[in-house]
Length: 152
Image 1 (cartoon, helix red, strand yellow):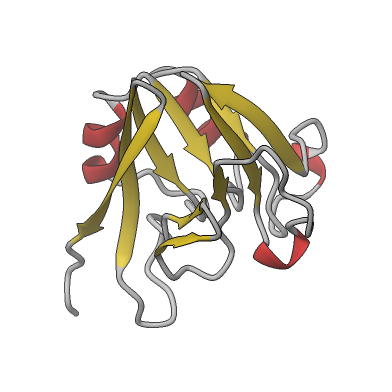
Image 2 (cartoon, rainbow, N blue to C red):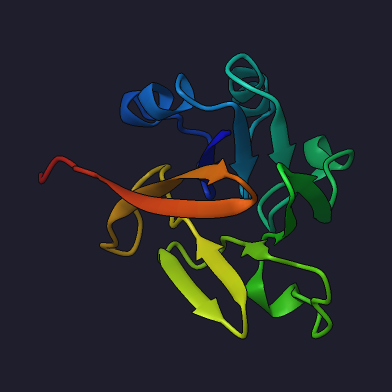
């Protein structure tokens, strides 16, 4: 199973991101979507697991604050802001979050922590990034994808 992991699109789906979405069996979005049209676009490519970010206001009230789900035997917990992750992560294999716009791929105490970074408008002079992953036999392999930006 192939995953595309994005966050902080802030109303922009870049063509380079769309190319990665076309290969995904599932899409995870860590919040700060900003527009229903982004949700609709994402759903055209694959089943979508999505959480609401701090910039997702009234239009996103139906989108959950956090999610727990299992894909191919791997248990996920997803929320936008890392500060809102519960202390007790019993049974969780992978935590996905966004908010900081800084990519993170770290294993801690047997749990994989993933922040795909931001793949929307470039902010704070940070790189534009997302992640892809593949789950095979209950194991997940993750790759960070850096998207080149135009220098002005």
